[in-house]
Structure formats: structure tokens, C-alpha cells
Amino acid sequence: MLPRHNEPIAAVATAPGRGAVGIVRVSGPQLGGLVQALCGRALKPREATYLPFRDAAGQPIDQGLALYFPAPHSYTGEDVLELQAHGGPVVLQLLLARCLEAAAAPDAASGRPVLPGLRLAQPGEFTERAFLNDKIDLAQAEAIADLIDASTEAAARSASRSLAGAFSQEIHALRDALVHLRMLVEATLDFPEEEIDFLRKADAHGQLSQLQQTLAAVMGRASQGALLREGIKVVIAGQPNAGKSSLLNALAGAELAIVTPIAGTTRDKVQQTIQIEGVPLHVIDTAGLRESEDEVERIGIARAWDEIAGADAVLFLHDLSRADAPDYAAADALIAATICQRVPASVPVIDVWNKTDRVAGGGGGAGAEPGVRLSARTGEGLDALRRRLLEVAGWQSAAEGLYIARARHIAALQAVDGHLMEAAAQLHAAGPALDLLAEELRLAQNALNAITGEFTSDDLLGVIFSSFCIGK
Image 1: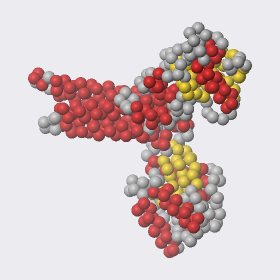
Image 2 (image 1 turned 45 degrees about the vertical axis):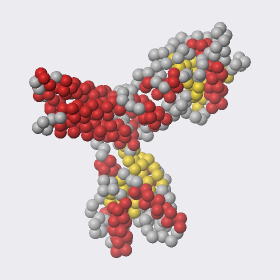
Image 3 (image 1 turned 120 degrees about the vertical axis):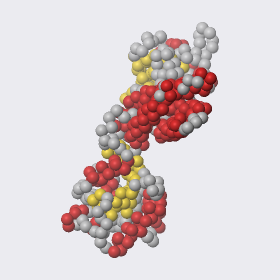
Image 4 (image 1 turned 135 degrees about the vertical axis):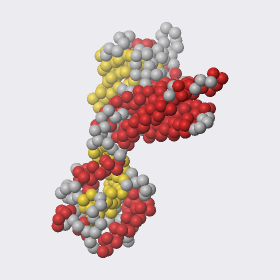
């Protein structure tokens, strides 16, 4: 560990602002002296004690609960002291300052500081200590942040399962199977003179095939978990007055965007995150696409095209009440062609035919059959659009038991898949190069270990934990 990982740390562990209760947390080696200095007595382990928190002059700062967790039975694996006080920001800052002051004060018996080197914690440093002290692995540490940041109930439940170790257990099972296969290959390399075909007798082909099938299942669940965490960006595009703002309001169930009969009402993007079956969808309403002499509207249209270019899915909204008008149809065709030029082929563009309530028989119009037909005003057809959005997102219903996953986990699993495919190619070759096979299996294991942190770099740890809140 780096030297800073051995230094005692302190921080306010609750969110900024006012609240009923706030917590100041201290973690480090041998906090007994600091506990005595702050609380005026020793504390029973893991037992809440109600007492006054006093400043250096003995005047009370506040009264609250003090809890002491001796190592290794604590969140960080070190000694941990938590002071639970009233949740005013001034009170908590006074308590934090008192912790730093008491740590630097000389001990009455030895004359040395009570707790040398106590400093303010960096973002995520308490959880980083928990990881470094083997209280949790890296995937579980990330699940803590994902649980805090969860935007839907399904995401929170999935993050909780990851924190409990569901994802890590599957990764460990894959790793164990991979290690066993590596052992067979290494044995063949180490003892060629024995003329024993370890790989054939141990059914290495079957083991590798089973490993790939298990990996595919894990990748599928991880992809669903990543979808719960990240969601997808959905951009509503189309001509002015097609009903884009009305559709956003209908999907969100609230009047978020201004709706008027005046073309060009929306001048800038309006964004709202909604959830469908627990999947967060970041829906963006954009300015109507047309040629305009208005400088402000032109800026809004340029921003609309920028959002379209970065979308995960585009809802191309058509006005059924004008679909048969030659000028309107020609403009729609031009917008469709431009969208195809600006978005990758992998990004789905869903044709949405709006205003079925204003057209006899639910709407006609050439080319109106593909896509989804609805009325943003009455709500008819919205459920079909929701189902279509889940479909293009790749969501599978009734996905119980999911765990949360991140983009880096998906990338690592894809790397494992690539290495296993190369290993399979070597194993099935007429004259397999066993050293190359062994190397591919080693690289696959390293990619798996990166998920749980058993094979990682300090740079990666810095990126991960810096995204946490201070005090966690």
C-alpha cells in the first residue's frame, strides 16, 4: 500500500446541507487515545454511547451518540470512530475540526501527538481502505457508489445484490474454472516427455466450451445490469409542431416542456429521466428541425442535431395530420436522410406517427405503417412506444436476480471472451501451439481479476474512488 493508506483519516460522512442527524467518521490504526480525548472515556466496542462532544476548553459543541469499532471488525478494517450529532453544517465542521485538533494535541503521558498524521479523507477513501484491507472486492466497492446513485428501484436492488457479492461470486467461479484449465495446459507444457495427452484425457475442449457458455450467460446478465445503471439516451426529433414536447410531457407524466400551436416554441433541449420497468431512459426534447432566419432558433436547431448525433436511440416524430402534404412529406424525407448520415447504423431510429386522435381512422398517409402510432394528447399508443424503447435498449423482462455492472466490467468480460476465442482456435488447430494457448488463458484470467481488483493498477483505483462522495 502507498504511505497515505496508513495515515488516519477523518471526514463528515453525511451529505452536505442540513439534516436531523450528521456523522463525523474517523478511521485509522489505534484510535483509543483519540476516543478518550474526544469522549472523555473509553467506549465499549459496537455499542452506542450518548455523551457530550466538547471542545478543547471543555465547552460542549453538541450532544450525540459515539460508536467505536475496533479493527478488524469495522467498515474499513481499521479502528473506526463515528460521532453522530445534529445535522447542521456548522456543528459537523466544529466536530471535524475538534477531531483534527485533538489528534494533534500532545498526550498527557508520552507528550507525543494523540494520533499523529490525522488528515481529511479524500473522496471514497474510507471505501478504498475497505477494499485494500480485504473487507470487500473492487466490484463490491463500485456497487456501494452505484447503490447511492441508483435512480430507480430496480437499479438499487441490483446494486444491493452486487454489494452482497452476487456478481463477484460469478466472476470467481469463472476464474476458478479458468485456473483449472490453465493447470492442465501448463502440465502439458511442463512434462512433454511423459507423452500423456493431459488435454484430451481431461476433456479440455469440453471445459473450454463450458467456460465460454458460462461467460456468455454472465455477460448477458452484466449487460442488463449495466443498462439498469446507465440507461439510454433517447432524443425526440422532428419538424416543428409535430408534438415533440407533448410526447416528452406524456412520457414523463408532467408538464415539463412548453406546448403551444406556435412553430418553434422549443428553442433549447429539455431533458427528463423516466423509468420503464426500472430501466432509466434519459429523454431529450429538441428544437423543431427546419430552416430558420431566427438566430436563437438556429442555435437551438444546431444543438438538436448535436443531441441526435450522440443518441442511443432517436424517436423521429411525424405529424399524421400533415403526413399527406407534399411539402411536409418532403421535409420529413430530408430530415430522415440527414439523421441517417449523422448517427451510426447501430443507433435505432424509431418512426413515431403522432396525432392519431386528429385523423379519421387513426391515421393514414403514405409510409405511415412502420414504427409506432400514438396520440401524445390522449395517451393512446404510449404503451406500445414504451415496449419498443425497451426492445431497442436490449432489455429483457422478468430479469430477476440481476446485479449492477459498469462499462469497465462489460469491457473486461468482452476481453475475456476474445481471449477464450483465441484459445479455442489454438486448441482446435491441427498442431496447437500450447504456449500461445497458455498465454491466452493467462490474459483471460487477468481480465477477470481486473473486475474484482485482484489484478489492477493504482491509476484505476484513483479513477474509481475519486468518483465517490467524501466521507464514503
